[in-house]
Image 1 (cartoon, rainbow, N blue to C red):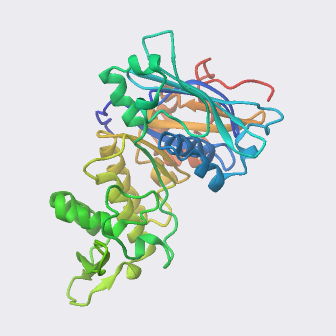
Image 2 (image 1 turned 45 degrees about the vertical axis):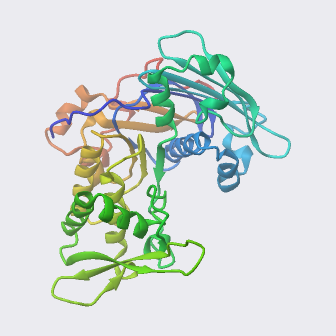
Image 3 (image 1 turned 90 degrees about the vertical axis):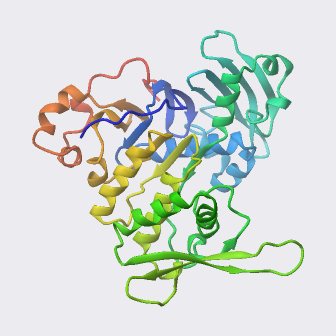
Amino acid sequence: MTADNHGPPLIRKLTIKGFKSIALLIGFKFESLNVVIGANGAGKSNLIGFLRMLSEMSNRRLQGFVVKHGPVDGFFFGGPSETKVIEAVIESTSLRYRFRLETTSDEKLIVRSEYVAPVSSVASNKISEWTYESLIGEPANWHDAAKSSLSDALASDVIALTRIRVYHFHDTSHTAGMRRKSGIAQNEELQYDAGNLAAFLYFLRTEHSHVFELIVSTVRRIAPYLDTIQFNHFLHGGGGDEGQIQLIWKQHGSSYRFTAGHLSDGTIRFLCLATALLQPSPPSVIVLDEPELGLHPEAISLLGGLIRSASKRMQVIVATQSPTMLSQFDAEDVITIDHEQGCSRFRRLDVAQLEQWLQEYTLGEAWQKGLVNAEIQSPPAPVGQQSEGN
């Protein structure tokens, strides 16, 4: 597999201290495409959880995140009696953003402090302290020193930090939002669970018809029976309500109009994934947790191509447990997470040592055979190394 030319990643280096099983991760390097593998309980979901928290924080929804994903004590490595503070540093091409979180007596997370600085600078400028919500996405409310340091390059990356999206398309039940009508005005962006799929696709058909047609033609490759995707518009009277939109579709050779409720689980999940990866104004970072669930191997192969292509326009972080999915990528793309000495340890694969095995097996087959593990990787360097004895 030949490597694609990726764009610059928003998250170039990541430091996390004390978040769930991630006791200490220092300056770990992320690329434009990152495929995360590891055994159950190794910490993949905790990395996804941290990125989800970062996304919610940057959009002033930290307390909502705590309510939904708490209790708060569970965010701290070993609990708050062992870990008093969660710390993190996110480095982009131009920006270094650092924050510290503590718990409160009423079981909330509070932003103890947050700082920004150019990556070339040793000094940092404080944005805020002792706030229940982060101010990273609101430069107008920063402390004066931080505000005055905001160059165009930093401002661009600050905006990008508010555009990290973690998608979760696992719920394909008949009551899932992706199968139902949605408010036609709910089309600014694809929601994390595709709950506004109908409205967003309708917006694409209206404003970006070429992208809409690309999405439909891509889905046809795994569902050749699909002829067209259309929409029913339900108007509501009064109050300026634009009404609701419903996704309907036809199959080849039939005039019957099906609703999204008639799409198979795999087809509608793939439709959501294709929409997320092909959208014309993508997030700065897309995070996908086990996107292969419920997909046929041929669909997984096509999804791998979509992910590789998307990583040229945005940073993509994918967690997977599928050997078929893993085989769609190069060894250079892979991050392994292992649970060692009570905490999560992150590593990149040693490509040179893997090379002999990859002449005989795909990357996924090598992983299945236990060849992709700590024994064939270089010893971890200080960068990205976790603390001992936790």
